[in-house]
Amino acid sequence: MNDVQRVGVVGCGIMGSGIADVCARRDLDVLVAVASLASVEPGRRRVAASLDRSVRKGALTEQERDAALARIRFTADLGDLADRQFVIEAVSEHEPTKIEIFTILDKVVSDPTAILASNTSAIPIMRLARAVERTERVLGVHFFNPVTTLPLVELVCSHRTAPQTRDRAEEFVTTVLGKQVVSAPDRAGFVVNALLIPYVVSAIRMADNGLVTADDIDTAMTLGCAHPIGPLRLADMIGLDTVVSIATSLYEESRNPKVAPPAMLLRMVEAGWLGKKSGRGFYQYGDDRTQA
Image (cartoon, rainbow, N blue to C red; front, side):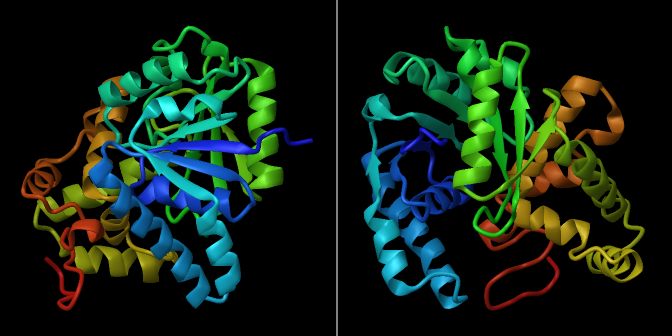
């Protein structure tokens, strides 16, 4: 039987807001920790927008949306997570920041059986777990975007994750949140991104070489391979900065030059072209939806 009622989410970007959403609609007490007081209202709006989309799609009633929103509170102080039974870190893919957060969580979360999880897309969990004293309660719980609709969660255990931590996490993710779990190895990229990102990087290299346009690459893969979305539109949806972070993690672990972030991708991120979330990546978003 699930024993988790109080959930903490650290970060309220695309992933954090989605995780808060799915937890709140499952009748859980959700406390979201953001970087500063100035981030509280943007975070609240992001979660509300997520729930509103579900109402428009008919997945939630207005009453269910309002009830879910009422279960979510916000704080700018990680110390307020002291009573949480399950904390999910969902900040950007920056290892030093994640390590700092886990160091603090290890000190402030008072229940010694509380699970400390990371939603990292690619960073090996053992590297994060080293920041805490009770490494047995740390694991990866990797959701996929959009969290509200994609059913998969990768569970990633380090060498030090306790079997009971993994079992409790799987029970929570499957029984309470209604997700499908796969067990992933504690290696950069886990399962999905270890397979996906080399494919995306290969498509970016093809575009970078000027061999074919982004639109033709995506059309070829959607119509020729029955993929639901082309690799460059997918990169825009993931976030080009996130693609860089994942590719860098894969390269650092394997030293395979084929997975290193291409120069084209690095320059786009440096220019602030992060994909759909910034309005421009390989395509433009908003009123002008043309190829960039």
